[in-house]
Length: 246
Image (cartoon, rainbow, N blue to C red):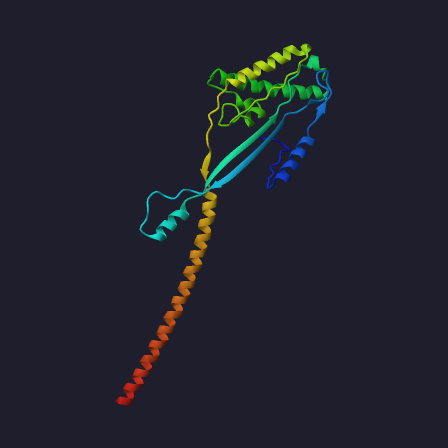
C-alpha cells in the first residue's frame, strides 16, 4: 500500500512515543460544518509494530558430547513474536446536502465517504460469508484487513448523538455496528524464526573459528621449525661425534 508522506519511526521509550502522538494529532484538520463544529476532515491511523525475541526451548533429546549440544543450541535461530497495534479514528460519514460542505471540504467529504463505503462493503461481505471480500477498493480497507476478518482482536466504538434531527445517521451508524459484530476474527499467535540474526551469529562464529585456525596453524608452523632446527642440530652433533670417533 502506497502512502505518500508517511514515515516509519522507531520507538525506544514512552516519551518519544507520546511526542509522536502529539505530532500526529497536530497534523489533523477539522472544519466547521452544519452537522459538526469540529468535523474531522481525515481518518487518523496509528500502527505500532512490536517485536520480541523469545529464547528457544532446549531440545528434548540429550547428546553424548557437550560440544555437539552447544553447537546444536547455537544453530537454532531465535524465535521472534510479532505484534501490531492499530488504533483508528474514523472520520464520520456526512451527507453533502446536510453538512453544507463546499470547495475543499466537499472533496474531503467525498473521499471520507468513499473509504467508509468500501469499509462497509468489506464488512457486509464478511458478515454474509461471501467468497470475495473487496479489500483492495480502498487504502483504508487494505490497512485494516487484519482488524476485520483477520487475525487481530478488534474492538469497535461507535459514536452517535442524541439529536432527533439526525436519527437517520444514527440508525445507519448503529446498523453498521451490528453488521460489524457479525464478523468473526481468528486469533492467531504469530511467531517466526529470525534467520538474519542466526546468520549474523554464524558469521561471527565463523570469523572466530578462522582466527583460531590461523593462530593454531601459525603455532604449528613455529613448532615444526623448532623441531626441524633441533633435529638438524642433533644430526650435526652426531656427525661430529662420528668423525671424532673415526
